[in-house]
Amino acid sequence: MSKRIIVDPITRIEGHLRIEVEVDNNNVIKDAWSSITLWRGIETILKGRDPRDAGLMVQRFCGVCTYSHYEASILACEDAFKVVPPPNARIVRNLINASQYMYDHVMHFYHLHGLDWVDIVSALSANPQKAVDLARSVSPNPYNCSATHYKAVQDRLTKFVKSGRLGPFANAYWGNPSYKLPPEANLVIVSHYLDALQVSKLGGQMMAIFGGKNPHPQSLVVGGISSVMDALDADRIGGYLFRFKELKNFIETAYLPDVLIAATYYKGEGAAGIGGGVKNYLSYGGFPLKDDWSETLLPRGVVKGRDIAHPQKLDEAKITEDVTHSWYKGKEALHPYKGKTDPDYTGYDESGHLKGGEKYSWCKAPRYDGQPYEVGPLARFIVGYAQGHKEIKGLVDSTLAAAGLPVTVLFSTLGRTAARALETKLVADHTESWVNELVANVKGGDDRTWTRCDVPKNSEGRGMTEVPRGALGHWIRIEDKVIGNYQAVVPSTWNCAPRDKAGKRGPYEESLIGTKLANVDQPLEILRTIHSFDPCMACAVHIIDPKTSEIRKFKVA
Image 1 (tube, rainbow, N blue to C red):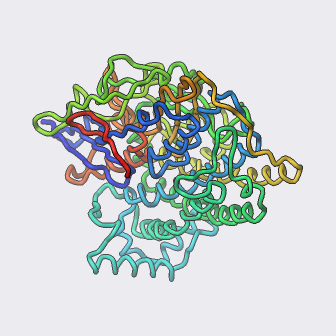
Image 2 (spheres, one colour):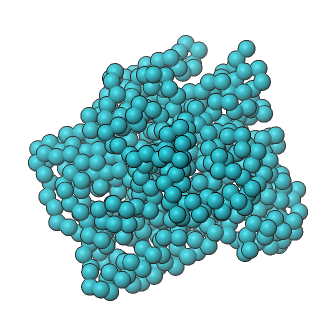
């Protein structure tokens, strides 16, 4: 006899997400449905506007991924305008993006995903000196490590518990059998959870130096950047570098070692492939090392069926969006250039469940060559590993050796979490070189930051890049110098996708199949796997009245 379990809302994410699963008598998930429960109409709002304004508006898809959409929109316009920014603009954009990657990944592991692995209550019984020994076993110089400090963290947690005001630690599944870490490991990681609340601010400050502010930076323009004085100012560059070095130290002495600790105790789940998903991986390429994007730090390509021996080239023409099971009008899968965003809300069934056989999500179903594909740090690292990317292979192989795990462990929830940490290290390792490249250009007399350009009468373009959560694409069609159509296919659209016309599940849904719940009333395992993708629902569903399907109108006096 199957049982339906509803997790709504999924917390510790951006936006509104509902997960429904069916479990058998052994509490093993046999089917799953992923549904975004809020729609937004920004693509529709953009129609008829100057394309140069789009970048500032699409940042409002989300309050987390602001720079990501800003840059993708600018890239789409530059493609349509047929303009290439000067080298200094490329470098400054990489520096802003690097700051977002580093603080976003750190914040995700500790504040959004960490409590899926770490039992806070268990940390109260840890031996502080043994915690020191554990931290030093995975790092020669662990971050903020001493028996005195760990004891202070314990005292702080105890006060939370005694006061009854647990804050972010309230309403969790403490004591669940799916927690595997010993008390000392829990104490080490929760101490870094608290440290990360301060450290992650550094990334936001780094973004503000070249972006003007954080969130919603304002320094990108079609053809380059507008933060000229900041990019050419030694004090501003020095301020960025100073903050970067402190953030990089945390990444190397806290974040990476903590993920290695988790991998040591959760290796059984990784080896079993729990949370593996659709087996297909896609990446657009990110962080251009050359102005024409012919070389990028993060790879471009696809891996199908986990066949890392035969990576494939990416064919943009094979990207489509299906709306068979989405609350939108339309029957055929469309390429984003031809995409439509016309709502068609049909609601839930009489029992309050999702209509799994009909429409059940505001998320569309992106497909590549008719198949669902996972995007994100794991996808980038699998594509890079398959392509023989020297740095990616080195990071993966050394980590697997340290944890005593085979490469197949990548295809799991644990692998997805580890890939994000390794990617943070990869980006950090290149950030200072971009600072040095910028300084060298300026010293050599090249202070160009913008290439003049005009809006074409009729054109189309796409901005395809890699952002913290995965492959991001913006497609724009310009008609009579204004936006005629605009479509954004974001990482969480790829990953949160519902079934398509052929009935193929999306990555979230497929990743849950076969997972056994220790306690159906505490679906910790569902949260752990879904959080590993770092969901951002607001980005994926571009204010509507569900009864009338009318976009709200506002008048500002």
